[in-house]
Image (tube, rainbow, N blue to C red):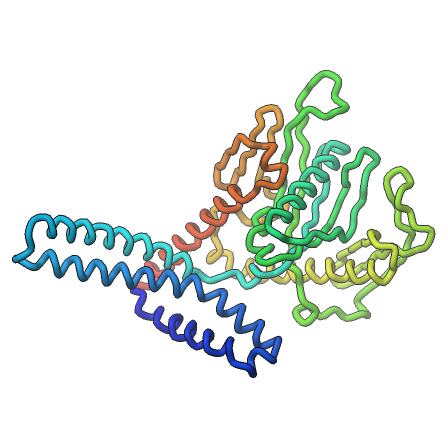
Length: 364
């Protein structure tokens, strides 16, 4: 079944040679591309070698078992080796199937995260601030860097909306599952009778787009400047450094007022606009092949409620996979790996089943 994996092994050895070639080492662009390819195929080659070792062990154990002159103790040892090798072959086969699933080409990208308060007024804005803090703390645990692009702060310390970039290895591969509606159930500080209120915030995770991928005609842009505003009169610039960019063909509007420099705000706003247009392009492409993209973790659409954070019960429930964890404080302090790992597993399982179904249809 995995005979074709020898091509990965040959390419792996070829890359090992090239990465020590002085002509490659002196070419930073080529070296980076080869290193990326090497990183992507290394897990496949390593798992394939484990699989091959298990196949050899099973064959050796079978040969011993078929030897009629073997005494009882040696036969028992050979049988144990046979069963272990057989179990390993099954396990490595399943792991290889997962590794061979098509990779999302955006997985290695940085991300732009946009959080907006939904239903619930001031409480929704405060919840948006909680989510921003959660993702910021998670980024720290992964060794990623966070940079605010734009923030519309409320007097109570919440955010009507906030957008920020997370830069780091594999940021999109893990955070892409966060897009959707997040719901919170808790007693607001302003609630005198102790009643639990329900509020929502929407999260959008956009892969950062390169300029070469999304070309924007300057004639399609309307750029306005204005004075930035802050909660309670704080952080207000006396110059018109804030930027509002309107992309006329799509109607998209992006604002950035976090920096005191008009140039920096424009640069950040263009990054957000480019990433939004890139996401729109991806959504249009995905719609054409929706039947091939069925997934247990949902569509990732911002209108889809994906998760509930219940403060009185100290629990988080991810509705897409039915996962409930009673460690809400840890999660809100950035401990998201358990949730994200479960979502990745469910997504891979769904894609693997989809591949199997497609192969069955082709055979029929």
